Length: 167
Image (cartoon, rainbow, N blue to C red; front, top):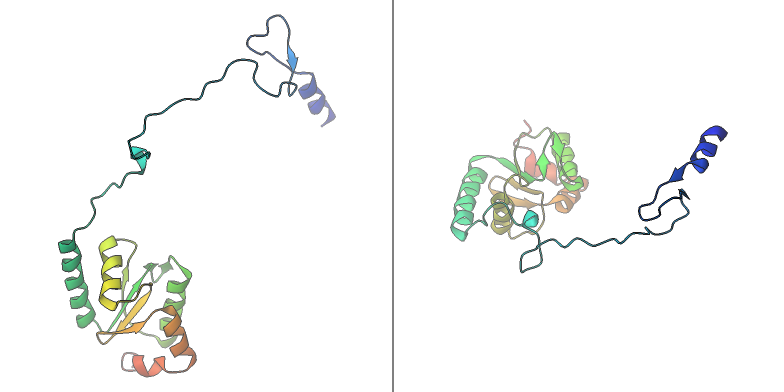
């Protein structure tokens, strides 16, 4: 180890602009040669095109069609969960907690990953008038998010809501 540190301290660094002599490594605090900042072109709004949205913004008509499809699915399926991620791989702690609660009751449900499509994410919030995700629907009715489901579960009220499905 001593030999390595000795070799490093003896090594000299050739510095451009300093002819005929070498300078020990680490003894020059700043480069002795001019440095220039590169200027890159940016759009008028100050952002770079790499940060521009890649997909078009959904229209109000797109959102209404998505809401119509989600309402249809909510009516056709007894238990529907809108969550971040999938039941086997939740992408947030609140979604994971709701999945665990439903698993405790052995409930079969349809899950939608709101991270896959911004229309689903925006649409479900508009349907329920509830700002957060996950959201659980049972028999076509909005039950609540993680906090409400946790409270219902802790008070033994959730089993009554889900009992018809757990038979």
